[in-house]
Length: 330
Image (tube, rainbow, N blue to C red; front, side):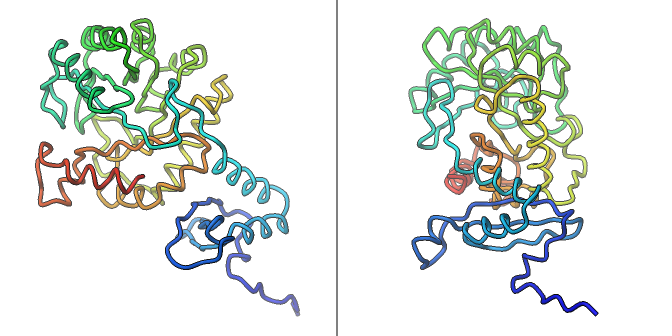
């Protein structure tokens, strides 16, 4: 006969094999100062539906200490990474939210229909965005809309390098949006100060080494599949947790290759291989990704799901939903 008493709290029964996550919570009602300073959601997953338990930080720390071993190490690491200061990005401090504006130098962007395909128009657009308050200008020459096919590397460089060079010469912080190491290198030579890779440095075998030697900030984004296939029935076990796991693995790969965590930025990839429910769940769980210990980039402006939630508004009419999404993220 087993005379062991039952745990007095259900979350103390978590299986040893369960994956553990922490999502810091904003206060939702009256609570003590201690609760306000340290309320977290413990998420545990052992193959079935994740269990979510709202706890004070002290409860989580005490539980982890009683468990010891790998469980305590996991909780301690997540808390430390949630608490850690975020390094400035290209000299831009992150003590407040910042804006990355996007210049698509493509003929087929979903959001602007190719209006910035001409380099002079794209340069003017980047300057206007900076004047309007954008902190970083992200320049890309490959459409990542669902179903898009990429141009050749030479064509991609011909599109973006004049724009990157002109904006950098104007004193703007320019991010290079590409999956190709050769374009990354050429963009940095042209004055770019940041790399934004929607494949999280997996699309090109040379990208990881280039990132390690470049000493610039790197955005690691999650995408299921690639732009050509990503919206063909994307599936997940638990979307927020699966995205977290992927980004955690890519951070580990970057650190092993010589890219320190303070140079990494994570992007959960809204709309990249996700259905509308997937996107909404990620937005609900955004604070979860602070457990990765990196700045968080959220790109949702004018995405399809906003149109679907706003009476099928076309991309040009999705600004209200884009603002609402940005405010939610903040």
